[in-house]
Image (cartoon, rainbow, N blue to C red; front, side, top):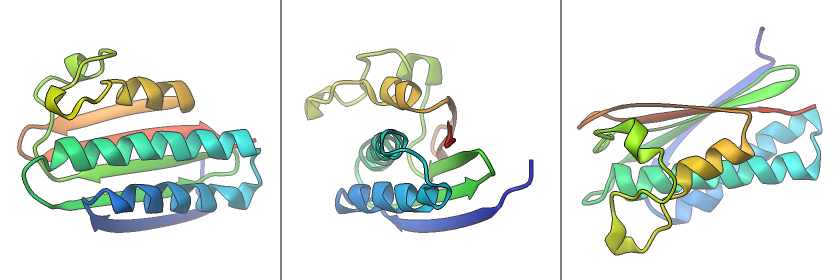
Length: 140
């Protein structure tokens, strides 16, 4: 299916940019006039993906997070990518309540939340090269 619009942004891996990213993604998706519930789902999933990139991709340094959104006639694809630490074991990281940083008192539900609020979720990662999260959501 041919895209009807596309955008890409990058920002520093600081917590203030999590809210920025979720607003940008939802605003971009709004072009197809989805329901408020769908926009809320997108904001939630993007918030989780960007937070993971910030906290786990760059635990000891600041780096770049990229977000690319592609709008299709009936859905949106959102790609969140960092170029940091990467994930050693993706399957383990996707287990509910698992966290690689228990000292942060995080719930370990990031991937579960993304899967719950989006229609599809794919995670690609390579240690010391970063992580890419690809999510899609039907808009109509």
